[in-house]
Length: 208
Ligand SMILES: C[S@@+](CC[C@H](N)C(=O)[O-])C[C@H]1O[C@@H](n2cnc3c(N)ncnc32)[C@H](O)[C@@H]1O
Image 1: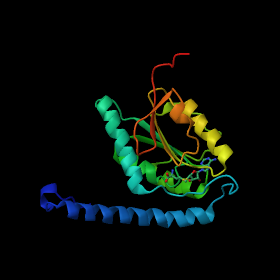
Image 2: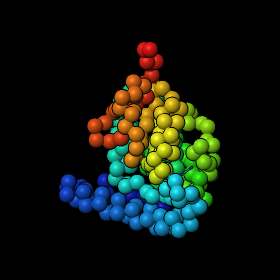
Image 3: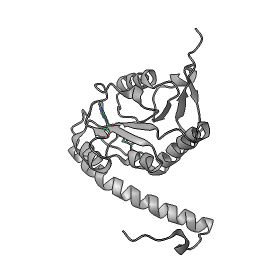
Image 4: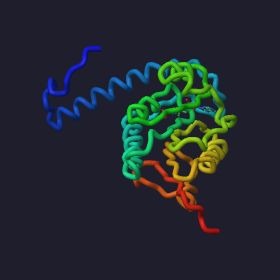
């Protein structure tokens, strides 16, 4: 690929920068949309309880992961790269963003079509075709991300609790469209952002 030096590019005004961002996010959304249609048509998920691949808005994904990266850098710039998992990773769209922000990215996805796309994009050693209920390595990750895999409320709440129990102390949870709000009263967790669904699992054991 032909490489430009940064100084070959003109300086942009804030309006031009915003315009450039809108165009780039628009292109990303078009690519994700292309795979979304095929993923949904080919889905083998249980439609009574599970969502097919529905992508999270890429701007929000970017803001959430940048927030977590900046938080972790603020704790210890020299540590990392940190392990990041997307549970129900679809085509790997979120993992691509996290990878660009220097996380060591991993994903699990049950549905065959989006799994195959993610395995090609991210690498088959990093993405497993696994069921959420069978996977048993959640504790290995510093950052756990999900965007509501279940539309059945009982399963979604059970899943949320499983993740909260398994997440390592000191780990961070990004939980999009979470159903249960109990985490906000759970002494193991503190919310890191008032606008984004991001929580820290505290390191210290809670007093009885
Ligand atoms: C709402 S989509 C989120 C996709 C992606 N993580 C994002 O944020 O853009 C939920 C994903 O969870 C997957 N999923 C649903 N049930 C699952 C299960 N039991 N095991 C593994 N993945 C599952 C779906 O196939 C789908 O790709």
